[in-house]
Image (cartoon, helix red, strand yellow):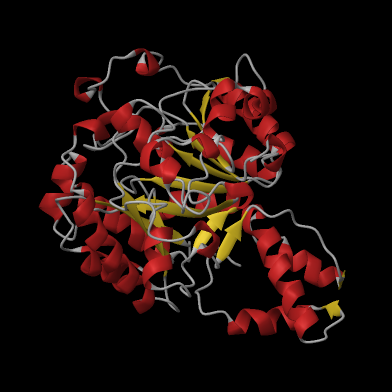
Length: 436
């Protein structure tokens, strides 16, 4: 895996603030009221936040180094920043794809309309149970469930696409199918993301389910994906070993995905990075290690030259079961979870129960989506068709262009037109998300 393979990030998760109106048990940022903070180590000691002007400088750097990057503005609770509309407006003016990650508690119809007008493409809201009491206990604030559901319904009524995000744990492991159904049928979510716990931040103090129990979660997730194939996109998050599970159980699944360059199923430091409220840059928001700070070092230098980013890309140097595994290049394990449990970003992912050696490495051929391809055209495209591709996020655009051209060659189509694109899209099983 060469450094040249990863010339830029395609997705950036930017924690704008430590402030939050909830105090979630598993928060990797240890955000929220001071009285509820649990972490006092060096990597959580600087809780300062960038000013509006400093945020604008960061946006300039992102736009220059990673054009059209999906930029997730999150927290803490980003809507608590008084300058959130200014930040969104400026990021949109620099052609970034702005998504807001929020708990949904403070969303109003007026705020939703303002953010939509300023260029927000979509929202991501967290919902962890159907039972309000259980959700509120996990989020440590009474009334959180009611307000989040209200926020989701406001977004749906205003035509704003949004994602529902659920972290699986002991509190909801038996309710996942019902939560997914509620997300689609009652709230109108376009996407349901199921997150697997990463034991960093306050997450290290949360009692997790076992690796064997997680295998049953993967089985349940697969059934949910099949059920909502045409109506709601369902993703596994922080679970790269789901690729191995699908290879064994459903090798033709459209849910199979990976990242180019041998990054496997974990994009940390290869296609993805996180920015802390004070400007510290990490390969993954869940990973409390930093390659530099944007007040002192450029984003390009941190991405290309920092020891941390260089080391996390050394997937051929993974240790223990991840190092020995024949699914190394297709999966690679979660690097943040490995660190959270062992203190080593190259250690094995403790959530995976697989014992390497069952298959010959030569037999491991993973199909499905492969993110991070360069968006290069190899046949003629009509200008209108090229413009249509700009509606697709940059991190998947190259893959889509590649597939479109493969289809056109197969059908002896010499020029890609809008009509050809519409015909191809009509054959795709998945729902439309964020206008694509």
